[in-house]
Image 1: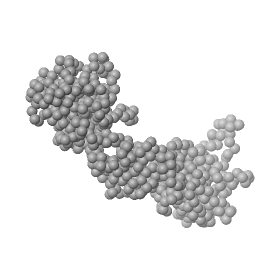
Image 2: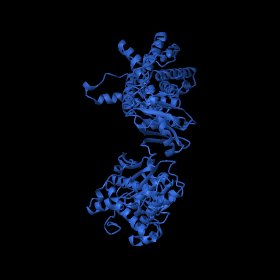
Image 3: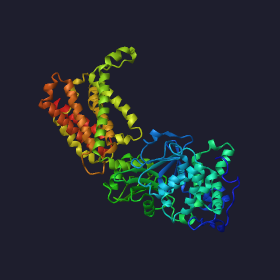
Image 4: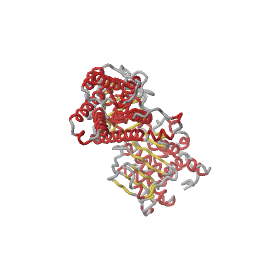
Length: 616
């Protein structure tokens, strides 16, 4: 309806006595000055409880008292009936956003509050009334994240949004003037569904009706002005809705009831296990001061909370003492992924006790709130064997593709060289040199893609610590066995410098970069690994990488053998594979404790050097 509900004039109600001409169950207990609503509600002392954010290219409206509810209002947005019923759990469609009959799918937690399609409109409540009934009947909106979709912020829709965002106050008689809310919703619902001429169906007294119509006129004044000026279609619906929500606060909430409101903004949230969540929030309150308020907003669902104290400083707090892991595991994960830490020694690290700690003290963290929350989830999900198996298989697949590509380049090298002009041809015809050179180049390309943002995760940094030197005997012993793979006679050259450079630099470095750089880094994405200060243990990425290395060595021996089946069952073959497995485990531990592939390459070169000097 593009004209005022009354007679085109907004009546200002300024006297408390003006609002008392009604029965005892529907009194308006405070002054309503509709002219004052032309200004922002915050000018009247009301806190800014609503905010609009840009998330993934979308304008999202939220309420700081219900941060798990996100409202998206897009002009012309609609989904079909079949699509609406397949939306993710925690979805609410409002007033025509879903072209379907009103439905309540409690099992999937998908709801359509509407009175347009698939119903008898005359006998169906308006959207705002449906929302109010759902909240009063106990709809639980605290248990998960919810997305609310609308396509036009008429008063019916905005009232429904206000009710959903303020669902905790709606169910607390002392937190709002609930009688006034019910009468306002009833009147707007009848007008929106049946028309202005049917408003007498509400059964209100003439005096109450006039006062409520003055409120509705005041709330619709901006909408009517925009439509009159043909600017409604160009209006930012998120900002417009925010302004009307603030005006509704003035009508429905006594400012004294907002004394307990704290300015807390949710920055990120992830689901954990057992209905627990990890959240990142911003507030001027301290971590202990904020806990009671978090309990009020989220119930007992908060497992971990990260409180942003400045641009880059955070305090971590474990609110659920019965979490399966402590903050110690979270610190380890954060130190692993934080560009501000990168495995460095000293105090510039995430740390603290098992229940409270914080970000690096130097320059703070360079992680985003979403990355901090995701790290908390990774600490929980890394315990999943299925995820570890999937990560292992993915890494093995990438390794296989790289090996096949290097093998293909080696096989087609001569034909490729013949196609090039003579000046561009490379004087390389030894298959070992070509294979490992191709392996190095392909691995570097893969790392440039995967390790661009976090090179330290893939060992691309200088070594730290000294404990990794303890594993030097492992490399020497592997070399003394004579069963470590040595290029040896496969490299035919009269140039001793080329021989030793290839034997000690090219081949060991290409293998360590591939296995302990790329493959290990991919596996370590969701796993706990050692660091320079941690206890000694066999990590999942180290074991996984060692298995793949041993398999690769075994496959290389079989491919070079003239009798593969006989070789496969020979003792020599088993010895080579066992030594490769032992060496790879030691190299993996060196890589983790030094945070770098350089010591692993050094020890590999020393093992090869030992084998060459001892066995020729």
